[in-house]
Image (tube, rainbow, N blue to C red):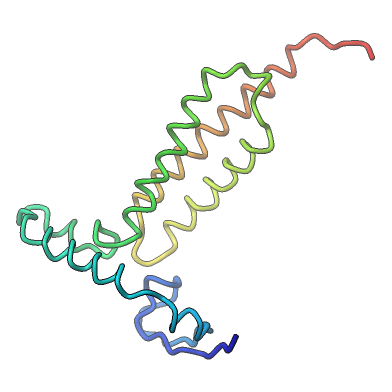
Amino acid sequence: MEVRNVLVADNKFLFPFPSSSVRTVPVSLFYLESNPITMSKLYHGVINVADKFVPNALRPLWNHAAGPKTVFFWAPVFKWGLVVAGLSDLRRPADQLSVSQSASLAATGIIWSRYSLVIIPKNWGLFSVNVFVAGTQVLQLYRAWDFSRKAPKTAS
């Protein structure tokens, strides 16, 4: 598989570099040649139709660099599912909680919360969902720790 360097001039969505900088990014020619354009055409067609129905008051949000026209909006929207799952786990008995899973999700939430404020444009939707992911999982970790502290020790 051949890899070439591709110049990326407007990379504010790819990396947290100033948008005036030019970087070379290795991109596989296989990806460039096999990436189906039909989904892109379908997406842009849907966006163009929806554009006509967006009220003027919502235009700034609609056209924002992290608005509904981009993955930077929809990825955090779907990530709220992790928050819902964490909240539903509050009904689960503390002895059945996965400490490694909760620790991983808490760390991920903390790391991505920080990252979402470093990238350009700042993604407040990503920040908020990751704060809640971290918060629900820290709560789960506390429940697991509290259970292990209060559980009677069995002699083995």
